[in-house]
Amino acid sequence: MSHASNASAYEVNFDGLVGPTHNYGGLSYGNVASQSNCQVASNPKEAAKQGLAKMKALMDMGFKQGVLAPQERPNVAVLRSLGFAGTDAQVIEKAAKEAMPLLVASCSASSMWTANACTVSPSADTADGRVHFTAANLNCKFHRSIEHPTTSRVLAAMFASEQHFAHHPALPAVSQFGDEGAANHTRFCKGYGDAGVEFFVFGSSAFDNRFPAPQRYPARQTLEASQAVARLHGLSDEAVVYAQQTPAVIDQGVFHNDVIAVGNGEVLFYHQDAFLNTDKVLAELSDKLARRGTNFQAVCVPREVVTVADAVKSYLFNSQLLSRADGGMLLIVPEECRHNANVWGYLQRLTNSNGPIREVQVFDLKQSMQNGGGPACLRLRVALKEYELAAVNQGVIMTPALHDTLNIWVDKHYRDRLSENDLADPQLLNECRTALDELTQILKLGAVYPFQLA
Ligand code: SUG
Image (cartoon, rainbow, N blue to C red; front, side, top):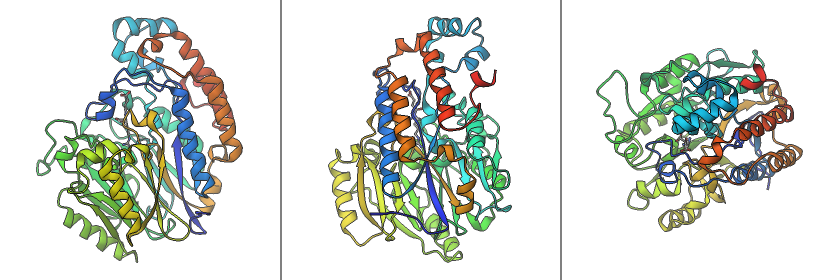
Protein backbone atom coordinates (compact mmCIF):
# COMPACT_ATOMS: atom_id res chain seq x y z
CA MET A 1 0.00 0.00 0.00
CA SER A 2 1.28 3.50 -0.76
CA HIS A 3 1.02 6.10 2.00
CA ALA A 4 1.84 9.26 0.07
CA SER A 5 0.84 12.61 1.62
CA ASN A 6 -1.08 15.24 -0.29
CA ALA A 7 0.38 16.33 -3.61
CA SER A 8 2.08 19.60 -2.76
CA ALA A 9 3.33 19.25 0.81
CA TYR A 10 4.73 16.47 2.95
CA GLU A 11 5.66 15.65 6.48
CA VAL A 12 9.24 14.46 6.33
CA ASN A 13 10.56 12.50 9.31
CA PHE A 14 14.26 13.05 9.94
CA ASP A 15 15.41 10.23 12.19
CA GLY A 16 18.51 10.45 14.30
CA LEU A 17 21.17 8.00 13.27
CA VAL A 18 22.37 6.40 16.51
CA GLY A 19 26.00 7.30 17.14
CA PRO A 20 28.86 4.86 17.77
CA THR A 21 29.06 5.70 21.50
CA HIS A 22 25.46 4.81 22.36
CA ASN A 23 25.58 3.78 26.02
CA TYR A 24 23.55 3.69 29.21
CA GLY A 25 24.98 6.40 31.43
CA GLY A 26 22.03 6.94 33.77
CA LEU A 27 22.30 10.61 32.95
CA SER A 28 18.68 11.73 32.89
CA TYR A 29 17.16 12.20 36.33
CA GLY A 30 13.39 12.10 35.85
CA ASN A 31 13.62 9.70 32.89
CA VAL A 32 12.78 6.35 34.47
CA ALA A 33 14.32 4.14 31.74
CA SER A 34 17.60 6.07 31.72
CA GLN A 35 17.91 5.76 35.47
CA SER A 36 16.99 2.10 35.71
CA ASN A 37 19.33 0.93 32.93
CA CYS A 38 22.32 2.83 34.26
CA GLN A 39 25.53 0.92 33.49
CA VAL A 40 23.87 -1.88 31.55
CA ALA A 41 26.16 -2.71 28.59
CA SER A 42 24.84 -1.26 25.33
CA ASN A 43 25.05 -2.47 21.74
CA PRO A 44 25.62 0.57 19.48
CA LYS A 45 25.59 -1.52 16.30
CA GLU A 46 22.22 -3.03 17.09
CA ALA A 47 20.87 0.37 18.17
CA ALA A 48 21.85 1.97 14.87
CA LYS A 49 20.39 -0.92 12.89
CA GLN A 50 17.09 -0.83 14.78
CA GLY A 51 16.82 2.84 13.86
CA LEU A 52 17.72 2.24 10.23
CA ALA A 53 15.15 -0.56 10.00
CA LYS A 54 12.43 1.85 11.14
CA MET A 55 13.55 4.46 8.60
CA LYS A 56 13.49 1.88 5.83
CA ALA A 57 10.06 0.56 6.80
CA LEU A 58 8.56 4.05 6.66
CA MET A 59 10.25 4.79 3.36
CA ASP A 60 8.95 1.49 1.95
CA MET A 61 5.43 2.48 2.98
CA GLY A 62 5.71 5.64 0.88
CA PHE A 63 6.51 8.18 3.60
CA LYS A 64 9.23 10.76 3.09
CA GLN A 65 12.15 9.90 5.31
CA GLY A 66 15.39 11.67 6.09
CA VAL A 67 18.32 11.14 8.41
CA LEU A 68 20.05 13.39 10.92
CA ALA A 69 23.72 12.74 11.63
CA PRO A 70 25.03 11.87 15.12
CA GLN A 71 27.58 14.01 16.97
CA GLU A 72 31.28 13.81 17.70
CA ARG A 73 31.77 11.88 20.92
CA PRO A 74 33.55 11.81 23.25
CA ASN A 75 33.23 15.57 23.17
CA VAL A 76 36.85 16.40 23.92
CA ALA A 77 36.29 20.14 23.54
CA VAL A 78 33.79 20.08 26.41
CA LEU A 79 36.22 18.17 28.61
CA ARG A 80 38.88 20.76 27.78
CA SER A 81 36.47 23.53 28.74
CA LEU A 82 36.20 21.83 32.14
CA GLY A 83 39.94 21.94 32.68
CA PHE A 84 41.26 18.63 31.35
CA ALA A 85 44.35 19.31 29.26
CA GLY A 86 46.97 17.58 27.11
CA THR A 87 46.56 15.52 24.00
CA ASP A 88 43.06 14.23 23.19
CA ALA A 89 44.02 10.83 24.64
CA GLN A 90 45.34 12.45 27.82
CA VAL A 91 42.16 14.50 28.21
CA ILE A 92 40.08 11.32 28.08
CA GLU A 93 42.42 9.46 30.39
CA LYS A 94 42.41 12.22 33.00
CA ALA A 95 38.64 12.63 32.87
CA ALA A 96 38.22 8.86 33.30
CA LYS A 97 40.46 8.92 36.35
CA GLU A 98 39.28 12.10 38.03
CA ALA A 99 35.67 12.61 36.96
CA MET A 100 34.10 9.60 35.28
CA PRO A 101 30.57 11.13 35.25
CA LEU A 102 31.92 13.96 33.09
CA LEU A 103 33.51 11.54 30.63
CA VAL A 104 30.26 9.55 30.47
CA ALA A 105 28.29 12.73 29.76
CA SER A 106 30.78 13.76 27.07
CA CYS A 107 30.24 10.36 25.39
CA SER A 108 26.43 10.33 25.32
CA ALA A 109 24.87 9.59 21.94
CA SER A 110 21.76 11.47 23.08
CA SER A 111 21.53 13.55 19.89
CA MET A 112 19.89 10.44 18.38
CA TRP A 113 16.59 11.69 19.88
CA THR A 114 16.04 14.30 17.21
CA ALA A 115 12.61 15.28 18.54
CA ASN A 116 14.79 17.30 20.92
CA ALA A 117 17.08 18.78 18.27
CA CYS A 118 14.98 21.86 17.63
CA THR A 119 11.47 23.25 17.14
CA VAL A 120 10.29 23.60 13.56
CA SER A 121 7.55 25.86 12.20
CA PRO A 122 6.51 25.19 8.62
CA SER A 123 6.35 28.08 6.18
CA ALA A 124 2.55 28.18 6.10
CA ASP A 125 2.56 29.34 9.75
CA THR A 126 5.39 31.87 9.80
CA ALA A 127 5.34 35.61 9.13
CA ASP A 128 8.07 35.57 6.47
CA GLY A 129 6.91 32.40 4.71
CA ARG A 130 10.10 30.48 5.48
CA VAL A 131 10.50 27.28 7.49
CA HIS A 132 11.92 28.27 10.89
CA PHE A 133 14.20 26.18 13.11
CA THR A 134 15.26 27.00 16.68
CA ALA A 135 17.90 24.66 18.09
CA ALA A 136 16.93 23.43 21.57
CA ASN A 137 19.27 24.44 24.40
CA LEU A 138 18.43 21.22 26.31
CA ASN A 139 19.55 23.14 29.31
CA CYS A 140 18.18 20.75 31.93
CA LYS A 141 20.82 18.05 31.44
CA PHE A 142 24.54 18.67 31.02
CA HIS A 143 25.03 15.83 28.51
CA ARG A 144 22.25 17.24 26.33
CA SER A 145 23.17 20.92 26.72
CA ILE A 146 26.33 20.26 24.69
CA GLU A 147 24.38 19.17 21.60
CA HIS A 148 23.10 22.43 20.15
CA PRO A 149 26.24 23.90 18.56
CA THR A 150 26.74 20.84 16.37
CA THR A 151 22.99 20.42 15.90
CA SER A 152 22.89 23.95 14.49
CA ARG A 153 25.72 23.24 12.05
CA VAL A 154 24.12 19.98 10.91
CA LEU A 155 20.70 21.61 10.42
CA ALA A 156 22.30 24.45 8.46
CA ALA A 157 24.04 21.91 6.23
CA MET A 158 20.75 20.07 5.66
CA PHE A 159 18.50 23.08 5.19
CA ALA A 160 20.94 25.50 3.60
CA SER A 161 18.74 27.67 1.38
CA GLU A 162 18.27 31.09 3.01
CA GLN A 163 15.39 31.70 0.68
CA HIS A 164 13.39 28.86 2.24
CA PHE A 165 14.90 28.19 5.66
CA ALA A 166 15.62 30.38 8.71
CA HIS A 167 17.79 29.12 11.57
CA HIS A 168 17.81 30.51 15.11
CA PRO A 169 20.47 29.67 17.67
CA ALA A 170 19.44 28.02 20.93
CA LEU A 171 17.78 30.24 23.56
CA PRO A 172 19.92 31.60 26.44
CA ALA A 173 21.29 28.66 28.41
CA VAL A 174 19.58 29.21 31.74
CA SER A 175 16.80 27.26 33.41
CA GLN A 176 14.31 30.11 32.84
CA PHE A 177 14.51 29.34 29.12
CA GLY A 178 14.81 25.56 29.31
CA ASP A 179 13.80 24.33 25.86
CA GLU A 180 13.53 20.71 24.71
CA GLY A 181 12.44 21.33 21.14
CA ALA A 182 9.79 19.47 19.19
CA ALA A 183 9.17 16.92 21.98
CA ASN A 184 6.93 19.58 23.54
CA HIS A 185 5.54 20.96 20.31
CA THR A 186 2.80 19.59 18.07
CA ARG A 187 1.38 21.08 14.91
CA PHE A 188 -2.20 20.57 13.81
CA CYS A 189 -3.35 21.28 10.27
CA LYS A 190 -5.65 20.13 7.51
CA GLY A 191 -3.00 19.47 4.85
CA TYR A 192 0.71 19.80 5.63
CA GLY A 193 0.96 22.82 3.35
CA ASP A 194 -2.01 24.63 4.96
CA ALA A 195 -1.76 27.18 7.76
CA GLY A 196 -1.95 25.26 11.03
CA VAL A 197 -2.03 25.74 14.78
CA GLU A 198 1.09 25.08 16.82
CA PHE A 199 0.62 23.58 20.26
CA PHE A 200 3.35 24.31 22.83
CA VAL A 201 3.30 22.29 26.05
CA PHE A 202 5.43 23.46 28.96
CA GLY A 203 6.26 22.00 32.36
CA SER A 204 6.57 25.18 34.41
CA SER A 205 6.92 28.92 34.24
CA ALA A 206 10.07 30.74 35.27
CA PHE A 207 8.42 34.04 36.14
CA ASP A 208 4.76 33.36 36.87
CA ASN A 209 3.87 31.41 40.01
CA ARG A 210 0.30 30.78 38.86
CA PHE A 211 1.71 27.69 37.16
CA PRO A 212 2.37 24.89 39.68
CA ALA A 213 5.74 23.15 39.37
CA PRO A 214 6.38 19.40 39.82
CA GLN A 215 7.79 18.37 43.21
CA ARG A 216 10.03 15.42 42.46
CA TYR A 217 11.47 15.66 38.97
CA PRO A 218 12.45 18.76 37.01
CA ALA A 219 10.16 20.40 34.47
CA ARG A 220 12.42 20.72 31.46
CA GLN A 221 10.41 23.16 29.32
CA THR A 222 9.30 26.60 30.45
CA LEU A 223 6.42 28.68 29.16
CA GLU A 224 8.85 31.51 28.53
CA ALA A 225 11.01 29.33 26.27
CA SER A 226 7.98 28.26 24.24
CA GLN A 227 6.84 31.87 23.91
CA ALA A 228 10.30 32.94 22.75
CA VAL A 229 10.32 30.24 20.06
CA ALA A 230 6.87 31.31 18.86
CA ARG A 231 8.10 34.93 18.63
CA LEU A 232 11.31 33.98 16.80
CA HIS A 233 9.29 31.99 14.27
CA GLY A 234 6.86 34.82 13.63
CA LEU A 235 3.75 32.89 14.66
CA SER A 236 0.58 34.91 15.16
CA ASP A 237 -1.56 34.50 18.28
CA GLU A 238 -4.14 32.79 16.12
CA ALA A 239 -1.60 30.11 15.25
CA VAL A 240 -0.51 29.25 18.80
CA VAL A 241 -1.96 27.43 21.81
CA TYR A 242 -0.05 26.93 25.07
CA ALA A 243 -0.82 24.27 27.65
CA GLN A 244 0.76 23.15 30.88
CA GLN A 245 1.60 19.54 31.53
CA THR A 246 0.11 18.14 34.74
CA PRO A 247 2.97 18.48 37.26
CA ALA A 248 2.04 15.13 38.83
CA VAL A 249 2.72 13.27 35.57
CA ILE A 250 6.19 14.82 35.31
CA ASP A 251 6.75 13.42 38.79
CA GLN A 252 5.77 9.99 37.43
CA GLY A 253 8.37 10.08 34.67
CA VAL A 254 6.71 12.05 31.87
CA PHE A 255 9.73 14.24 31.22
CA HIS A 256 8.51 15.43 27.81
CA ASN A 257 4.98 15.92 26.52
CA ASP A 258 5.65 13.34 23.81
CA VAL A 259 5.63 10.68 26.53
CA ILE A 260 1.92 11.37 27.12
CA ALA A 261 0.48 12.82 23.89
CA VAL A 262 1.02 12.81 20.14
CA GLY A 263 -0.74 14.75 17.40
CA ASN A 264 -0.89 14.78 13.63
CA GLY A 265 -3.09 16.47 11.06
CA GLU A 266 -6.42 17.16 12.77
CA VAL A 267 -5.93 14.59 15.55
CA LEU A 268 -4.61 14.79 19.11
CA PHE A 269 -4.10 11.43 20.81
CA TYR A 270 -3.55 12.04 24.52
CA HIS A 271 -3.83 10.63 28.02
CA GLN A 272 -6.57 11.94 30.28
CA ASP A 273 -3.98 13.20 32.78
CA ALA A 274 -1.64 14.87 30.27
CA PHE A 275 -2.65 18.53 30.67
CA LEU A 276 -3.94 20.98 33.24
CA ASN A 277 -7.29 22.57 32.34
CA THR A 278 -7.82 20.06 29.55
CA ASP A 279 -11.29 21.27 28.56
CA LYS A 280 -10.09 24.83 28.10
CA VAL A 281 -7.04 23.70 26.12
CA LEU A 282 -9.10 21.48 23.80
CA ALA A 283 -11.67 24.23 23.27
CA GLU A 284 -8.95 26.70 22.28
CA LEU A 285 -7.39 24.21 19.87
CA SER A 286 -10.75 23.40 18.38
CA ASP A 287 -11.64 27.07 18.02
CA LYS A 288 -8.40 28.19 16.44
CA LEU A 289 -8.35 25.23 14.08
CA ALA A 290 -11.98 25.82 13.07
CA ARG A 291 -10.96 29.32 11.99
CA ARG A 292 -8.46 27.64 9.68
CA GLY A 293 -11.14 25.35 8.27
CA THR A 294 -9.86 22.39 10.24
CA ASN A 295 -12.00 19.98 12.19
CA PHE A 296 -10.02 19.18 15.34
CA GLN A 297 -10.47 15.67 16.78
CA ALA A 298 -9.25 14.68 20.24
CA VAL A 299 -8.82 11.00 21.13
CA CYS A 300 -8.55 10.66 24.91
CA VAL A 301 -7.14 7.54 26.57
CA PRO A 302 -8.88 7.24 29.96
CA ARG A 303 -6.81 6.63 33.09
CA GLU A 304 -9.06 3.70 34.04
CA VAL A 305 -7.92 1.88 30.91
CA VAL A 306 -4.27 2.93 30.67
CA THR A 307 -2.58 4.40 33.74
CA VAL A 308 0.19 7.00 33.57
CA ALA A 309 2.53 4.23 34.77
CA ASP A 310 1.43 2.06 31.81
CA ALA A 311 2.08 4.97 29.47
CA VAL A 312 5.58 5.56 30.88
CA LYS A 313 6.47 1.88 30.76
CA SER A 314 5.07 1.11 27.31
CA TYR A 315 5.67 4.48 25.64
CA LEU A 316 2.23 4.22 24.02
CA PHE A 317 2.18 7.96 23.34
CA ASN A 318 5.76 8.16 22.15
CA SER A 319 4.45 6.79 18.91
CA GLN A 320 4.46 8.20 15.42
CA LEU A 321 1.02 9.13 14.17
CA LEU A 322 1.14 9.14 10.38
CA SER A 323 -1.45 9.96 7.72
CA ARG A 324 -2.02 7.20 5.19
CA ALA A 325 -3.04 7.98 1.65
CA ASP A 326 -6.60 6.76 2.36
CA GLY A 327 -7.02 9.35 5.12
CA GLY A 328 -6.80 6.86 7.99
CA MET A 329 -3.95 7.16 10.47
CA LEU A 330 -1.25 4.69 11.34
CA LEU A 331 0.37 4.50 14.78
CA ILE A 332 3.98 3.32 14.97
CA VAL A 333 4.53 1.99 18.50
CA PRO A 334 7.47 0.36 20.28
CA GLU A 335 7.47 -3.37 21.01
CA GLU A 336 6.99 -2.56 24.72
CA CYS A 337 3.33 -1.72 23.96
CA ARG A 338 2.72 -5.35 23.05
CA HIS A 339 4.07 -6.43 26.42
CA ASN A 340 1.59 -4.35 28.38
CA ALA A 341 -1.84 -6.01 28.49
CA ASN A 342 -3.75 -2.78 29.22
CA VAL A 343 -2.07 -0.93 26.39
CA TRP A 344 -2.24 -3.74 23.86
CA GLY A 345 -5.90 -4.40 24.62
CA TYR A 346 -6.64 -0.70 24.26
CA LEU A 347 -4.87 -0.55 20.89
CA GLN A 348 -6.92 -3.46 19.54
CA ARG A 349 -10.13 -1.68 20.48
CA LEU A 350 -8.86 1.64 19.13
CA THR A 351 -8.14 0.33 15.66
CA ASN A 352 -11.44 -1.55 15.54
CA SER A 353 -13.43 1.55 16.45
CA ASN A 354 -14.59 4.16 14.00
CA GLY A 355 -11.97 6.67 15.09
CA PRO A 356 -9.23 8.22 12.97
CA ILE A 357 -6.51 5.76 14.05
CA ARG A 358 -6.91 2.62 11.93
CA GLU A 359 -3.67 0.72 12.09
CA VAL A 360 -0.87 -0.07 14.54
CA GLN A 361 2.61 -1.23 13.61
CA VAL A 362 5.15 -2.41 16.15
CA PHE A 363 8.91 -1.79 16.01
CA ASP A 364 11.76 -3.18 18.07
CA LEU A 365 13.69 -0.15 19.32
CA LYS A 366 14.84 -1.67 22.58
CA GLN A 367 18.34 -0.18 22.50
CA SER A 368 16.90 3.34 22.37
CA MET A 369 13.95 2.54 24.63
CA GLN A 370 16.30 1.52 27.45
CA ASN A 371 17.39 5.14 27.56
CA GLY A 372 13.83 6.46 27.37
CA GLY A 373 13.67 7.11 23.63
CA GLY A 374 10.79 5.64 21.60
CA PRO A 375 9.73 6.00 17.95
CA ALA A 376 8.66 9.63 18.36
CA CYS A 377 11.86 10.67 20.15
CA LEU A 378 13.89 9.34 17.28
CA ARG A 379 12.33 11.58 14.65
CA LEU A 380 12.12 15.27 13.86
CA ARG A 381 9.10 16.20 11.77
CA VAL A 382 9.50 18.87 9.13
CA ALA A 383 6.46 19.76 7.02
CA LEU A 384 7.73 20.89 3.63
CA LYS A 385 6.17 22.06 0.41
CA GLU A 386 7.38 20.36 -2.74
CA TYR A 387 9.79 23.17 -3.64
CA GLU A 388 11.13 23.32 -0.08
CA LEU A 389 11.78 19.59 -0.11
CA ALA A 390 13.66 20.08 -3.38
CA ALA A 391 15.83 22.71 -1.61
CA VAL A 392 16.85 20.27 1.16
CA ASN A 393 20.34 18.77 0.87
CA GLN A 394 19.38 15.57 -0.97
CA GLY A 395 22.24 13.69 0.68
CA VAL A 396 20.14 13.29 3.84
CA ILE A 397 16.97 12.01 2.16
CA MET A 398 16.56 8.27 2.68
CA THR A 399 16.66 6.05 -0.39
CA PRO A 400 17.13 2.28 -0.67
CA ALA A 401 20.74 2.93 -1.72
CA LEU A 402 21.44 5.26 1.23
CA HIS A 403 19.88 2.76 3.61
CA ASP A 404 22.22 0.03 2.34
CA THR A 405 25.25 2.32 2.46
CA LEU A 406 24.50 3.32 6.05
CA ASN A 407 24.06 -0.31 7.11
CA ILE A 408 27.43 -1.19 5.64
CA TRP A 409 28.94 1.90 7.28
CA VAL A 410 27.53 0.81 10.68
CA ASP A 411 28.88 -2.73 10.22
CA LYS A 412 32.28 -1.35 9.43
CA HIS A 413 32.63 1.15 12.27
CA TYR A 414 30.38 0.27 15.22
CA ARG A 415 31.10 -1.91 18.23
CA ASP A 416 28.51 -4.41 19.41
CA ARG A 417 29.20 -3.87 23.07
CA LEU A 418 30.01 -0.79 25.09
CA SER A 419 30.32 -0.56 28.85
CA GLU A 420 31.53 2.31 31.01
CA ASN A 421 35.17 1.14 30.94
CA ASP A 422 35.18 1.17 27.15
CA LEU A 423 34.43 4.89 27.15
CA ALA A 424 37.89 5.52 28.59
CA ASP A 425 39.54 3.80 25.62
CA PRO A 426 41.16 6.56 23.53
CA GLN A 427 40.83 4.30 20.51
CA LEU A 428 37.06 4.85 20.68
CA LEU A 429 37.58 8.52 19.84
CA ASN A 430 39.61 7.61 16.74
CA GLU A 431 37.01 5.08 15.66
CA CYS A 432 34.25 7.65 16.00
CA ARG A 433 36.12 10.35 14.10
CA THR A 434 36.98 7.98 11.27
CA ALA A 435 33.34 6.89 11.06
CA LEU A 436 31.94 10.42 11.19
CA ASP A 437 34.39 11.73 8.62
CA GLU A 438 33.14 9.07 6.23
CA LEU A 439 29.54 9.81 7.19
CA THR A 440 29.77 13.50 6.31
CA GLN A 441 30.84 12.42 2.84
CA ILE A 442 28.02 9.87 2.54
CA LEU A 443 25.43 12.48 3.63
CA LYS A 444 27.13 15.34 1.73
CA LEU A 445 27.19 17.54 4.82
CA GLY A 446 30.60 19.16 4.44
CA ALA A 447 32.57 19.90 7.61
CA VAL A 448 30.25 20.00 10.65
CA TYR A 449 32.22 18.36 13.48
CA PRO A 450 34.74 20.11 15.75
CA PHE A 451 37.52 17.74 14.62
CA GLN A 452 36.81 18.72 11.01
CA LEU A 453 36.73 22.43 11.77
CA ALA A 454 39.90 22.60 13.89
O1 SUG B 1 16.67 13.48 27.28
N1 SUG B 1 17.67 10.12 27.39
C1 SUG B 1 16.95 11.17 26.70
C2 SUG B 1 15.70 10.63 26.07
C3 SUG B 1 15.04 11.65 25.19
C4 SUG B 1 13.72 11.19 24.69
N2 SUG B 1 13.17 12.16 23.83
C5 SUG B 1 11.87 12.49 23.76
N3 SUG B 1 11.01 12.12 24.65
N4 SUG B 1 11.51 13.24 22.79
C6 SUG B 1 16.62 12.30 27.68
O2 SUG B 1 16.28 12.01 28.83
C7 SUG B 1 19.57 9.14 28.54
C8 SUG B 1 21.06 9.10 28.38
C9 SUG B 1 21.73 8.18 29.34
O3 SUG B 1 21.26 8.02 30.48
O4 SUG B 1 22.76 7.57 28.95
C10 SUG B 1 18.92 10.29 27.79
O5 SUG B 1 19.55 11.32 27.58
